Every structure is written in structure tokens, then in C-alpha cells.
Image 1 (cartoon, rainbow over the protein chains, first blue to last red):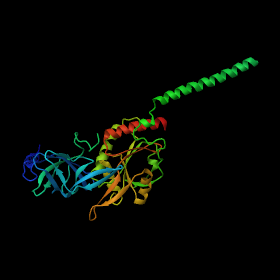
Image 2: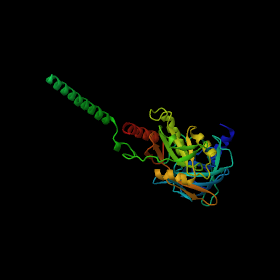
Image 3: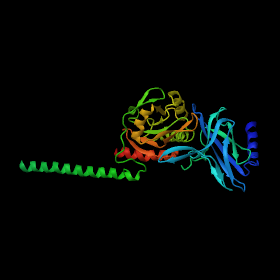
Image 4: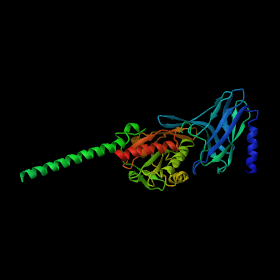
Length: 152
Length: 215
């Protein structure tokens, strides 16, 4: 493991204890490496409220992309529609999985090279707080345990 | 000689009856093994729509139409390269399914994934080539001006529309099913999203077994 990844791992561990978004833990973050020519990527992660207060995620941003937004893919009559999710509420104990084909972080116009295994930063802003930093690793394929939202 | 002629005529008639009877048994036995249409999930039967002639432009800048699909199974998907979630997810699952299907006797080496972009404004030939190569180098990728696309999509019941996202930005809502096109150019099944490689392989196996047995 490279020193950079160790440092980032420590940062990730520390991020869980940050006082902004208190109780919010982001795990298993990854981003599908976008195909050449595509300036749009989707990031996925697991969000868990391990605290005792309801958490409201109001926005996301990334220094590694020009634009980041929470989006959701919805299906209606076999048609895929992608819509902005303006805020996300997590009651105490609630876990929300952002997965392919459902909730995801829409990431547009990367500022860094998205090589396989690179880590990109995602800053999650909760109501009236400083952002929680989460890290997403760039992957060519989905992690083995990841299913699409309602697929097999 | 009259009795002999009568005997011969009777023997021929008996032969014909016996042959027909044996043939009937053989046919009914054959059909007893064949799947029943209602047992095949998502099968468009008994009237699978025939594809109508169309001409798109592929990632090499060459015309792409019905003739490229004749004689092979095609897994057809509509999308666009600026699509962050559904399209790369589906194409990755399709590519993984195709790796398995290469060993399938009905898909084999001739089978193809075809990706049709509903965003001709941003998806030129070079963009499509790089995009398709990322998933499966033998994937067909093509698009056309909107009017031409509509002729193909309308016939298949596919819809797509531009959705503004502020400024110049836009996304596309689009049908995200996987369309199974038979070697004789009929749309025989549509697999609705979300997709997984296992579902794609299973649907192909069931649908292609039925079509090649009865079609």
C-alpha cells in the first residue's frame, strides 16, 4: 500500500469522528472509471448514521471534479430518468446505499486523471456543518459484493 | 394380377399412413421437449415485431443497418456517452454477459452487443469508438440525426428526450431496456432495467431456445 493511501486511510478513519455531520459514516466508496471521451462519472458509497440525531445531507462537492451532485436514477415504464436529489435525510441508525442504477453521486468534468485505484475526494455537507470528507476509489468494474439497486 | 395390384395399392396406403403416424409421434415428441411460449419470461410471442429498414452511422463512420444484424443474435441497448450511471452500468453488465455467452452455442462468436446513442449532438464517431472499445472491442456503436433515430426507436417502442440541467448542460431520459434481436431480425424480447449479467444470460438462453426451436 502506498504512503498516500495509508495517509488517506487515516484521514478516512478520522473523518468518521469529525464533528460536522456527527455520526455520519461513509464507507466502501468507489467510482466507476468513466470510458474515454465521457466527462461524466458516477460515485457510489454506503452512508450510515451511527449517531443519535437525524442527519440531513444538503450537498456534495469534490475538489477533483468541477461539479458534484447527488442524483437518483428512477425507472418508469422501462425508461431511465436521472434526477437531482436536493437533500438526503438519515434518521439515527439509518443506512443508505448509493449503488449502480439508483442513488449516486454525479461527478462531472474531472480535474485529475481517473486512473484505476486512484482516490478521489468527496466532501459531504450536512446542515450547518463543515463538510465530511469521504474517499472514493476509482475502479474499472464494480466491487464483487456490489449489486445493482434491485438486480441480482 | 388384379389381387396383386390391390395388395400393392393397400401396402402403399399402409406405408403412407404408418409414415404419417410415425412422423406425428416424432413431431409431438419434439414439441413436448420445446418450451411453451407462456413459460418463457419476457418473450414477445406469437407476433414478435419485425425490424424495419434503417441506416445509422457506426463508430467507423460506415453505414449501419439491418444487414449487419442478420444471421446473428444482437443485444441492443440505447443510451449516450455522457450518461454516468445507467449506461456504463448496463454496458459493463452486457460485456460481462457476452463473455459468458461466447461459449453459448446460439450466441457464439457471431453474437454482438449494439449500442445506439440517442445523443448525436455530443456522440460523434470517434467518441463512440473509444466508448465502445472500453467495454467490448467488438461492440457495434452507432447513432444518426434525430429524425433518423426516431424512425428506428418508434418501431421498437423506445423513447428518448432531452432534459435541460441549467446552462448548456442537459441529460437524456431514455428507454433503458435490453432488446433481444433474433438472427431473422425480429424483436423477440425486452429485458427491463436494472440489469445484471446473470439475468441477461438467463433471458438469452430461454428466449433463443424458444425462437430457434419454433421460429
